[in-house]
Image 1 (cartoon, rainbow, N blue to C red):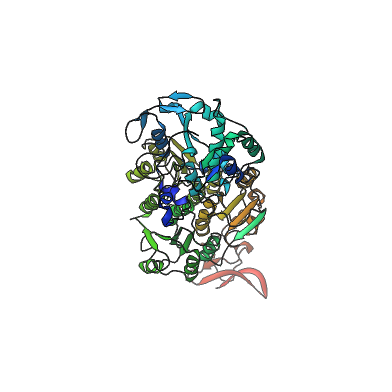
Image 2: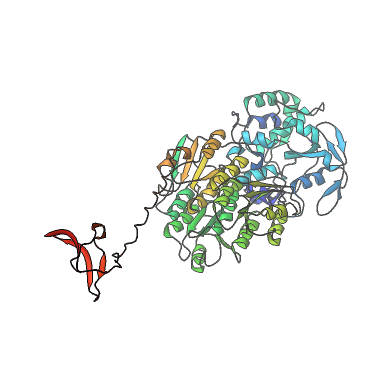
Length: 606
């Protein structure tokens, strides 16, 4: 096995590792890589589960990596380069590494420039996904991708050799340097053992061969186990359409929360009467594996209280100021969890930044930006962001520049990639340009469509390579999608906003392309009607008939025409003048008319 040891253990990883302290084993408690037991390599291999790989749904973005888990200014890659350099490294600004000496045991090469060296996830991220990580939450995947607690998990090697390895297991790739294959097989088993990952039949056959004889008989220290069992999706993926709904928005959020087991680490609580505060809370909750619940601003809804009691969280985060979550509600929450925190700022944008900063203490390589002036784009982004342990940061999209506070947050998160949710009408092109100048940002990508539904498809198609489950929420309301976005993010599934009576054709096509076999409707029939439940394409819904043109107004009623000529009583008048008015020389009013006994038109007294 390769030499060297990484003694730094990130705070995120520490929270994922199993800990069962005993007075007689304090050293083991302090060092998570102390052996749980001494075994032969082949005996350890025999403990691994053999299973067919899970081939659907992998996306590299699902594993947030190169975070600064202990906030010492160095991310995971830099920590590995420092630990594995055979000479003290030379640093530039911050923790940037400009020189050192790294021996790549895969091929026997030595490098002095960090650009020539890759930090290899020894068990590749794609292989981890196929052998168990598909069922993990975002925090567990992030912990795996930044595992500094086991020296074998991450290794500095020649970049081109690492590229050749790709996502392969030992049945398809082994290091090119002769004499390394035994060490490679042992390290592979150690990492898979630590992370409870399975091996497929071909992989097992190769490892059995590599660990035959003296190699497999070598004594190894079984590493401490990572906790990869909580939380998991609470129900199997079965084909069809299901609905999660309650009698109102609070009950629907509770029904969604029921998908979480008791004993969650955190519950987020937001007002059910407005959307801005909760838009950033949904991906924060997804990252930490907890639900998002809604309540009335001035009183804790009794059924919400009951659900929090069932969940038994260690932390409750009340999102928003006292107008969103009153002091009375906050006081009630203190009776329901050991720790209760309020994340609130002077406005929706500062609240968003506070929620993000508190939830993503280990950083986030990818961040989403969305307008805080409307909800549809941010809702779709929340599920996508939640699936990759990424935040959604709200901005005033009409601004002509990136505000200083948002830029500072992006820098503190060490985000190198930014995705903008929505077109230039909601987040200006000036903000997009400004993001490219934020320190550390290497990529800015806008995800937009012609309307909120097309934007939702674009966001999800970019974030999810494939997914067996899709969530749908109405695009004209926010309440159901808020809680649903946290669940969809936890389950690494897309959330599409749709009309209430049909599913956009582009969304149906995207779901098919992603291999989605199960559709979850968020909200009752008043929000998502029968057309959505039956997956009716919007293109088949007849356009409403245009309104009938208004009838032309009736011509104005004219008064009787006056004959300007001298009128003599009893004189004949033309039939065409029936109804006309005339006057005698003395001013007496006359009318041209007939009588029942005289059919001749005559001037008669009016």
